[in-house]
Image (cartoon, rainbow, N blue to C red; front, side, top):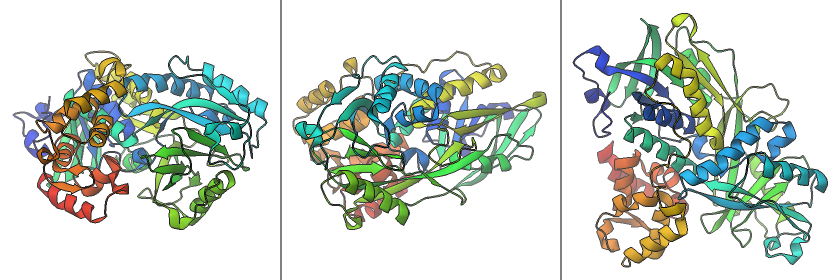
Length: 515
């Protein structure tokens, strides 16, 4: 099996005594949540895995979500009962696997401006409570009048509301933790590495990949196309690649504004056009508002919020909240392209969020598995289903194993984050409590590796600003594939919202040695 030491360059690690020593069981293309999840699952079954990602892990869709682990309440309206049930089951499963980056969040659903009658909403919530065998999260409650409840503070109307539960997730960190676990189990994770081409020969794949050091060839028994918005592009790089499935690209955008209300609850807001928008506490000082659904007709790539989407979200805020917010108040915005399975739905909002796995392995040809659609909540189950399709062709050493398997940093006693954070703060009294709590949230039990022997801020090395120190930056470069300031400030963390823009340049310079 190829070396899993990330300090060894790929071209050095693949200088074998024989060609067979550089043949992987699985080549995974794409470093989003689906690719990282499949790499982890496969490596844990004893398969040799190489994952290539042309940019950074979670650089596009997987870091541009609404950051929720949820069943998808609104999908019930479209009859997506199988998807909602699977997502609800996964919701509590993932919560137990990564209690540092996933935690419960209550949602207030006001009935003001609702295009749906209260009885219909309550019926949907009843199904939502019972479809997935809920065990940990509380059941739906009713608030008779929001103007008599603290959770109505900041709202224009004191209407009736329902309160239900889902979970928050640090989405890009979930991708990284899956990649870390995959590497620990023997996979090679190569970021900034592009698939140039791939072709079948003698029952194997011969793929040309390229990074800053140039092009090289590797071989693999199977290829997984988890390229997200680029799934169709990868198929075209294979001379005999084919798929009867299609992908429909939908842009979803979010805005971040100064905090709209007090409290640690979120809102699910219904608009007159029957679309819904979330308002969620974000990074302590802000409110995250989103998402939109807008068809994307251009080639896949970096996306930005449009003027129309900004206005739609600001209009939603104005419809519900007393605090006036305009474009000048926007702290940040982001947009991502969702690679949804094309089910020919009439509108972007109605397109299924379910996934389709298309296996091309006819006539004994080297298998290619193309991934269409999916959502972050169901990534683990998607990976498990992917391996079910590939297992008969690859004969892994073990069966499904990821259900309940803890992700890096999540192995805290009784999955109790608050107790873990309190213990950490007590053990390191010379370090700021707020900094240690942030570290506990981001890294869980791996915070010990980051901190080393540091007992005060001087022990954390160079200070970049705010509470960002070299010890954290170096940890992210060494263990989490961070190579640029943007990787650190907006994907491994959200410190970019609070730090001066000049910090990114300083980080780029500091990280140049790792590139």
